[in-house]
Image (tube, rainbow, N blue to C red; front, side, top):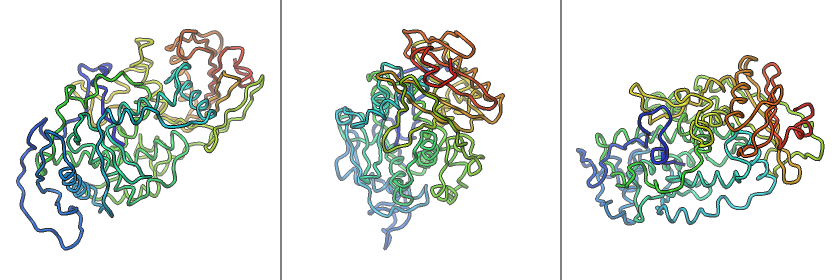
Length: 483
């Protein structure tokens, strides 16, 4: 799935003189695509790499995108884009890919219902998880908030279940906004044909971000190489001429930047991971990785640890009483593993929330800056914050008593020093959101905070245990000994 980088239209990044936007695709802003010298050649006798349905990868196409693309024009652009993805990725499409284009208004109307029906146990579990991460407050439904963030930032998607691509156009007429999103989603279609994206679905946030670091990283790396040829080797469609210059949709209400940072991880760090595997035009190591995808975001953040890192199976026994019951969602694991990318989002969000002006981390720790102080557009975020470096595993349990919710979260680290560093950062995080220390490792969070209640943070060697409850008196009932 391709996300539009809308941060430029919504927020000036901390520590930067100017915000960043999606990088240009080397085609003109509007009008006639950049001319490129082209030698005509006949169609091959059979399908081959770099040719699809009558078009070579470097063929010109007779289209006028100014008033939108009609059906025959879209077919030409899609077939040529498929040929181009083949050339870059060195893989052949086995079959055609259906691509449809809808307007932003159509997409918003169709997604108004969110992700469909969700069981009450899953909703309670998810609400508690995002409360522990300090990304979504007590009064906000976490699943609805994630759906809203996802829908506001989506530029297109590929559905493995349907085998089709949907591109979201910022104008009412069918447009591709250059070939960026189309190229990205075509890579997903190619991955599905070659490697079956529906198999072995991850069951935790950390495992999901690990696997998606490969899936989205592959698509992002191909997309970058594809666009690098635009204006030089290939003539490409122009970008849409929107009023924002950053993908449109600037009038939309701001979305949750913490959730955005959490979900943006595979797009930020994934391409670098894939480029570390690939050897020029030899993508065989990337192909092999689909048979053994990263098991954790750690392997994507640190590519040299791919294949050698295995998250610890953290043990956490229930010690609840006083009417508190463990929340166990149906048809999925009864615990969470949030991982290093989730921890980074948790701390980085404090740079952008409107509750407290000072962040828990420094902007230069999170943002990848160029020498001139601007954000690196190809890899804007650094998910290797000092406070989360050394993570080896975690386990999250959610609890409920009536309408109240609570959680216990245990995290393990490579050393006791790193465990203590994380615990201190988490305590600062609680303080950032209105917490006040009321005991040894115990914090009371102000009633007007989105995360009102009480938190207990303890360190035992290389292990940190966090307990969150509606009040200090409830901490010991959620987890015996806390508070």
